[in-house]
Amino acid sequence: MRRAAAVAAGALLALAAVAVTSAEERPETGTGTGTGAGDDTEKRTVPDFLGLGLWRVFTRLDRRTRLDVHDVSGRDRRVLWPSRWQVCTQYPEAGADLDRRTTVMIGVVRRGETCPPRVRTARR
Image 1: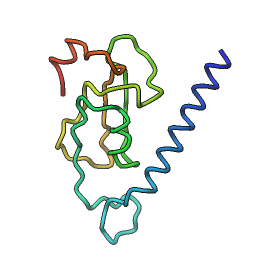
Image 2: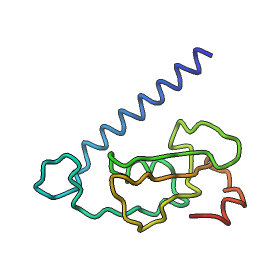
Image 3: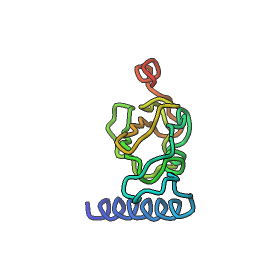
Image 4: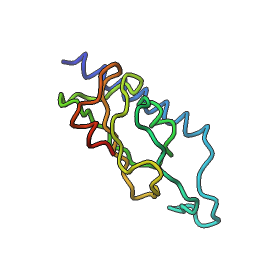
């Protein structure tokens, strides 16, 4: 039990470190001259993630974007290592406006698994 908790904590720390590093490499969005607090003048849209690896979601979304990732296989597994998962569903759909109140919801399965039929027919 302790080892599983330590592995999970280590995975989260590694993911956080990568997120901070990649955020530093990306230029800031928003070109306004406001106060900077919540200044979101540049239009952002949701990219198309369907069929891609989960890692692409983390690298292509702005660090300020709220993200909800869940396993859609029906097994209710924890999603710890983004490189081992692929995207089956996303909401909002690709091309939708993305603002600071939007939560992007991503449904994933393990790499090598197919998206469940009920998910494929209801793909968003």
